[in-house]
Amino acid sequence: MSTITSPRTLYVSDLDRTLLRSDGTLGQLSVELLNEVIDRGGLFTIATARSPASARKATAGLRMTLPIITYGGTVTADPVTGTAYDVRFTQPDVVTDVIRAAKDHANIEPIFFTFEDGRDWIRWDPSRMTVGVEVFLSKRGAKDRRLRPILGDDPLDVRTVHYVSILAKRPDLVAFRAENQVTMMHVAHFLSTDPGTPGLDWLEFHHPDGTKAAAVQRLRADVKAHRLVAFGDNHNDAPMFEIADEAHAVQNSVPELVAIATSVIDHHEDDAVARFIASEMAGVSRS
Image (cartoon, rainbow, N blue to C red; front, side, top):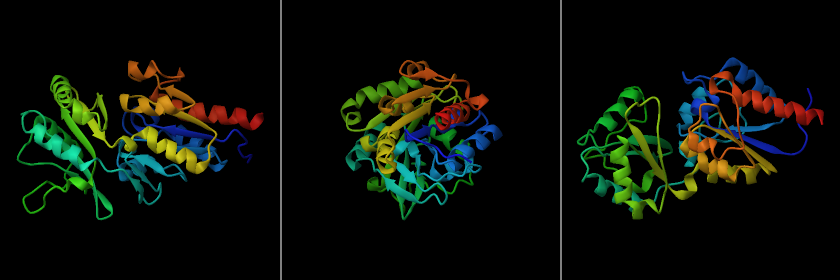
């Protein structure tokens, strides 16, 4: 089996609706092609809003060797064990300001992702069950080991928060973000849609150093890659696209991402990312 020659390229792909199919699984063709790339020395990893455990489960068929970028870039973890290498915590004063501001909005309630005692948790206030919180929890299921409500004897430590999500109707999110624009200046924030939550959109934010782009840049330096190629479909992939040497949007991407992409490749249902990488790598090995 031939190995990959220069240039030393790092390929980074988003997961949902980019590398994965609509049912959240990885196609068999993608598994075969990407494993061949990895086995030949290709540099491939993922950058996703999923947790390390969820990301590892979705890519279980891949023989990943590079660290995986999870929780939107706030947690970089081992691809096999899920152990966190790097966690970028949201500024505590920002978390406190958001909690205070949300109390003035009946339809706005943050969901906090924390990292404590060597593991990740999902925290929420059960006394403020908005539609968004109810939908979020219903999709997680009681078996999600991260679920941990904020209670009187188990309060939220704002110093442990690394990611915040608010699920609500877009007009409510737009108004909340505008009212808190000073606070939002100190974080990376994204307003995006998800086909899995029709009628409800997502406002997500975290430390500026916790974006996919920042995490990818750190990894690129670690592996000494000369070239960065990124793949994505949604708004939170935009910073990663902006710092990549090439950025390819799958056919089902939001228009805003397509506008800044190097090119539009095939649909995520058709193993587009894996086929693109395998084709490019084959060309490199022949040159």
